[in-house]
Length: 397
Image (cartoon, rainbow, N blue to C red; front, side):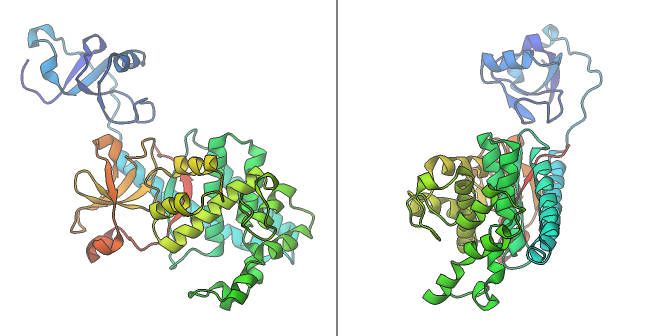
């Protein structure tokens, strides 16, 4: 066979060892990657079951027959190359815009919860419906990294982020739409009681005194009282507001409930909120995830922690990582392969920054990287210090 970079062959000539490109859009490709190494007869059978007549060989051509035995197929209506990098960038930007809008739309609901509870309910219900729409517009939603312009997320941004994590977990567990709505509504209001806590305590950067900490711990009761008096909010949602700091071992507050007394929706919200709090303290999504395993034994259900890991991936969005090609990257979006998320990467000098689909390149994450080990240029390029929040997304075609 002549030396050529690629050739189109009929499916009948597929053999194990080839690396091929399928004439399918990225969304209709069951392998969910551009380059498909054919490693087994089962994969050949899967390719033969697709609605295609040919593939393009891009590696392993020595495994094919000689030139005179190959009849290059005629390609009609070839699918144009899909710009996966552009799609990732578009998805990230869309997630950030939607996150900002949700946090902004939630402010009237917070400000009117006492003076105009009906308006507060309508505004919060509208935010929840948007979250539901964005979560369910894809059969396999992913989580995208979003951030705050401030040093830490605002109360509404934190609430939206916790709601998103909780809804992703609940969706993965197959809970009903009504349960998702109650869960989301509880999460967006879970910290509403903090508005009754003086700013001097709520915004204090240093450790709280015992008196201040005890005052802060009254926020679940304060929030519950603010919402319950209207009679508009459902009981499961109110339980989340009151008990989102309870733990399965009875060590939580305000009522020191044990596992059998804490509803599943509240357990989900409590775990998501705990993770968000650990993330704020550690500044690292992966360290926060690891801390859950090391210091929260017995406080959250192992099954729910496993679901959270499934949703976030081994390297959650916002993680700073080193790739197998030596690049430094920020994880921007989860993917089907937890070791190959969608990232924004640069070289070790902070240049050549680009969005990347690692599954499309056969590049993987090697390890997480500490911020203090990076140059100022890399820190600036990847915006390493940006607060980490989450929003549901999917690759936008």
